[in-house]
Length: 98
Image 1 (cartoon, rainbow, N blue to C red):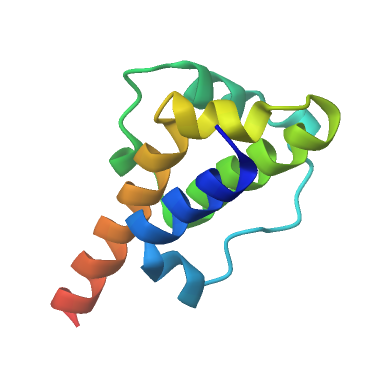
Image 2: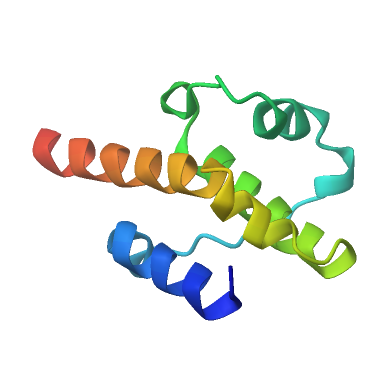
């Protein structure tokens, strides 16, 4: 999978995330809970809030700097799509509730 394909997949599946900041500053190396969530293929991302989901995305993007291909793997495994889909669903739910 090429980088452009991964970016296009991201843009096609969750355009709502471009309207909201998703990369945030935090100490990812000390966030063990995030590693557990990301490594569990059955984790329900609907059980965590949007800031936690953004932390996961940030951690994945950062990890790609040190482990070439981590971001592509997150797309290929479906992890990124699951996180982004959960963000989109939560944003839509919040807009309906307003």
